[in-house]
Amino acid sequence: MNTSFSLHKIYSIDDCPFNENHYSWFKFGDKFYAQQFAQELFDTFILEFGEEILKQEEIIILPSPYLSIPTASNFLCQYFKTLLNNYLFANNRKAALESKIYRNQTYVTDYGNLDFEERVKLISNDTYYIDRNFISGKYCILLDDIKITGSHEHTVNKILNQYNVVGNFIFVYFAELINKDIHPKIENHYNYFAVKNLEDIINVINRATFQYNTRIIKYILNLNETDFTHLLNNIPKDKANDLFHLAISNNYHQIQEYKNNINTIKTN
Image 1: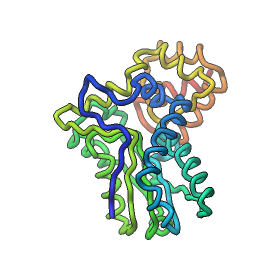
Image 2: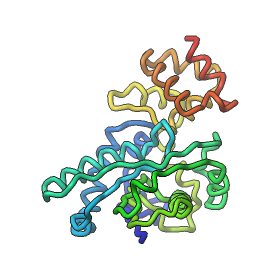
Image 3: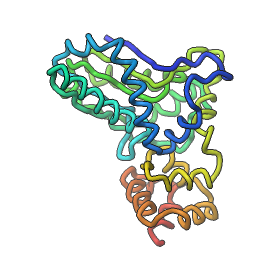
């Protein structure tokens, strides 16, 4: 059985129900806002699903699919899980467990400007793996930051069907585009609302609450040589090292568009 929940509903381009600056910083790695959003999301979610949650024997929580580098929603998921476990503890229930859908991403395109068909086509070449024995028969919370076209949910459902996973699945979103007359490119309007140039990227990386995610690493590895060198000269050495090790852990050194910048980090 599948169901869905979202905290914020987007009906109009001109009336955003959440703080666009905070959301943009969150998408580029500022965990302060991941924690804030998780609190807002959990507080409303538990009012609607609290009784149902307490009836479950085992609960599994899953962030959006990734291989080695977490997505922004993974940090949202971590904070949400902490809040959920505190709630379960207070009600003398077993803690939720965390699982993961492994995703080997094959493209460098930013799909935030694409429609549903284009997104599904783009991600159809990715490969996925899920531990069906671990989650089958469980109550699973699949958490993501925003639902724009539903391509993520469509893909996850396809994976669950492919692996013959049976259980109760609830898709939980911080925000959801309700008005389908609005073009899906609004996603990138939110993503880049406060992060518009290289200096904004450097500013985010140098925050105490920053941690790399897939979005910002792909953005950095796509920089031209001059901008990439400028970035390396304006972030701490340990942040450059983290960038290198995360990039190769996700096999980005096997992607032609990223090779030069990854090799530049190694030689610095």
